[in-house]
Amino acid sequence: MFLDAAGEKLIADIFNGELQPGQMDRFKQQIEFILEVDKLKHVLRKTILMDRSRRENSAEHSWHIALTVMVLSEYARNADIDFFRVMKILLVHDLIEIDAGDTYCYDDQGRKDQAEREKSAADRIFSILPPDQAGMFRELWDEFEERKTPESRFANALDRVQPFLHNYFTRGQTWQDNDIKSDQVRARMQPVNDGAPVLWSYVNSLIDDAVEKGFLSE
Amino acid sequence: MFLDAAGEKLIADIFNGELQPGQMDRFKQQIEFILEVDKLKHVLRKTILMDRSRRENSAEHSWHIALTVMVLSEYARNADIDFFRVMKILLVHDLIEIDAGDTYCYDDQGRKDQAEREKSAADRIFSILPPDQAGMFRELWDEFEERKTPESRFANALDRVQPFLHNYFTRGQTWQDNDIKSDQVRARMQPVNDGAPVLWSYVNSLIDDAVEKGFLSE
Image 1 (cartoon, rainbow over the protein chains, first blue to last red):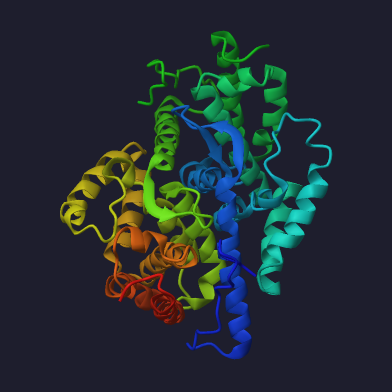
Image 2 (image 1 turned 30 degrees about the vertical axis):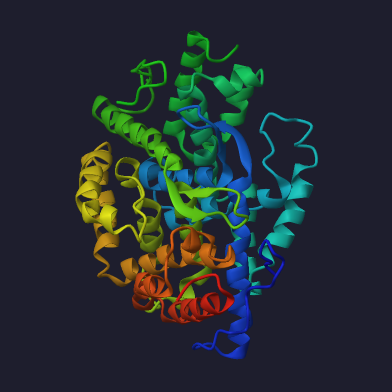
């Protein structure tokens, strides 16, 4: 149950609205979840904002790519996919970071136990919700991770393109700070090809350009 | 056109992918828009995060309420509305704040020219996109503002409930800092009733409780 900063349980049984007792428990779980996910705003990513003023957090990143669905949908490899589902996948995909943290994509050490950490996180966080919704959220997250459906592939493409754009348009600051090479970026971006071939083509030409301009080492 | 921090135009004509020349312009406008909306992450709201550590920004807020659609959809006044559209409305609804800033809902002075400021902002920001998409985004924003469709009413309800929950569960810190009274909060929350009567009932009981606990003055 959500406890406020002073430790007092504040979802009280004071709500005498239209809900029956059973529905009341369901409603509390839903509110509890909405309060819990606020923590994603504290999870910092390696990516920096376009003006380089600070690092981005995972809530901001999730908003950005969910919005991007509306802008770049025409480049999905499969044109007739369920974009509502893509959007839901993207809104949910990073929630596990509340417990597991953001694992830098080039951190080979951190990535070793990443799957395990994230699975435990999913178990805890989604189960705050009523069982039917917990199941739905878990399915969306599993789908994102498995990268098998066309919706998931497009979602993964956008998830990789956005931080790449931040890197390129801040002249590779994060690449340089972390000594990342062009081959690593190209390998990391591979799923973009599965989800959105045109974006992959664009990403590739920007990688070449980044190397040429000295933003990224070969 | 997007200029990076060093002033150099970085969307170069280097992209020799699958796109025709006309499509190329379209693609550039889309990327330009994706870079531009990054600025929403700098727009600070009055709302503070649940742990009271700092103020929330409008990108975080937009993510939070878009996610909330998935959790609270069953409480929409109209059960068979287009929740995909609700989600799109919410992802877009604050973009105008990039130019117009966040106007505090209880700032009567600031609200006088709010509509005008926001209209100019919408004109500039959405027109970065190709015309068809600019029109679609503008429609979503107008729909949100007009509060006439059931989708817009539910979107507005969620947009008001989320900061209210932050206020209540941080024991009314922002209410107290800005000398807000319960009548003002009740008036501000009225649209919740149009969009989600059960949530309105919940909000009302929390307002009563906040007054009783001393988080909010009568």
